[in-house]
Length: 264
Image 1: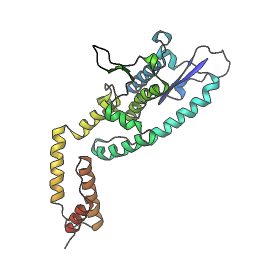
Image 2 (image 1 turned 90 degrees about the horizontal axis):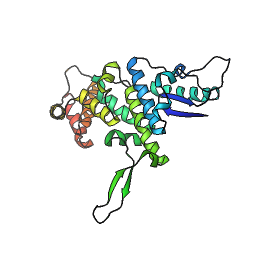
Image 3 (image 1 turned 90 degrees about the vertical axis):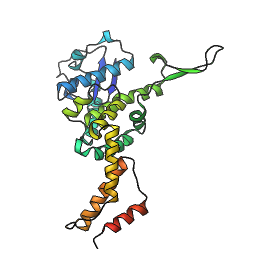
Image 4 (image 1 turned 180 degrees about the vertical axis):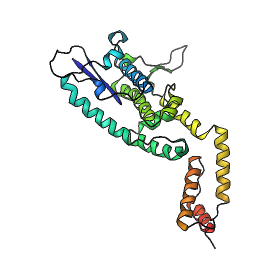
């Protein structure tokens, strides 16, 4: 009996029984081999998360051994298809460059929303935790408690499984240096917030940056050797930067500002 467990970029087919075959063995590593030791550790953690959610006891598997274990022949084409699709999606993810963080942030938010609108809730609110309502008694008011995994509904389980998938997407967009800075983060929200601080600075730094951008907007003017196209591109970049620090101007105001900046 085989159960296919989808761990985003890494999949493992847990086989209780595997028939001996003379044909060439096909292993999972052919379709999902990590590039670095750090990647391997991250993938192993993903597997542990998935196995835990599936309710598979830890004493039933050895991650290092299972990664090289042959998979069921009838599942090979399915895994190849899923892994190819995931790799294709990973190719579309923009790799983060610290100097281009504002652009990366906008595109990553768009990417996550296209993949699953609920992904945005997870990076804003943190991991989804299934709860149940405990009715009021004479001594205890009505309140919520965390559900046991055995009581999770299929829908709740699907919500919980989104967390490792988002973490995988974010890690797939990072180089070795940036990935190392968030490797210890436990949730997608923690990764997202850490990247924000690493690239944009603390709250006080962002406040100062906002003030400088507002000042640049108020003093915006054309340069002596600047073409109209270059002037417009520079103004648009400034407006986008202001938007990323939660400062936006009405179209009438920004249009007037640009017209006044045109060479006389």
